[in-house]
Structures are given as C-alpha cells and as structure tokens.
Image (tube, rainbow, N blue to C red; front, side):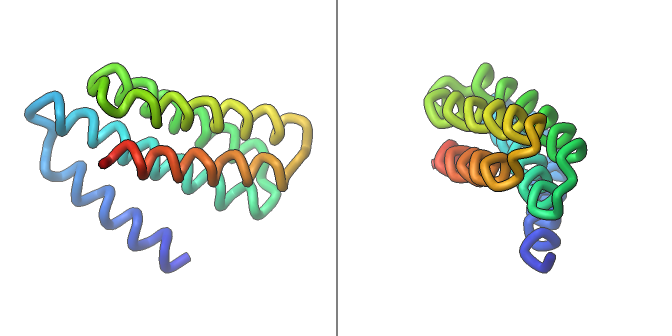
Length: 115
C-alpha cells in the first residue's frame, strides 16, 4: 500500500506540472497508464477481476495515447498494450494469477518507455 501511495504522489506531481508539449503529453499518458496498470495489478491480487478490467482498460487507453504522441516509446508501449489485453482476457476467464502476471509485465514495459 505504501508503494501505491508513493506512486500516486509521483503521478499527481506529474499531472500538476501541466502538459505544454508533446514530450510531456507522452509522459503524462505513460504515467497515467502506469497508475492504472498498478491499480489493475493491485485489484487483481485481491481477486477483483471486474475492477482489474476497468483499470486495465484505462491503462490501455493511456498507453495507446502515449504511443501515438511519442514514437520512440512505441515498442515498449505496444508490448504494454499487449500485456494489458492479456490481463483483461485472463481476468474475464477468472485466471487471477495469469491476469496479475500480465498486468505486472505491462508495468515493466511502461517503465521502460520512460527511458
């Protein structure tokens, strides 16, 4: 829970800075994708598959937007999108462990997209 609070504080800080250029817009979307992927993972670990799906959908929207804004991050964000889709598919089937694993994989790729 403490990690989640630190992550949320970081993301809120990014959002408050404003998005005045395309590079920052990509970072904003990637940060929002990361936030929602983390929430999907957390809820998946608690067995909340419907909430996992909601957050994975939001993470997917932001990952897609970030990929569109900043092509250099495209590869990792495409992999994150694939993992988020897999996470939702497994959650729909009630495969908690596989859904969480895929959501965690998306987090790794979103982090790599920041580099």
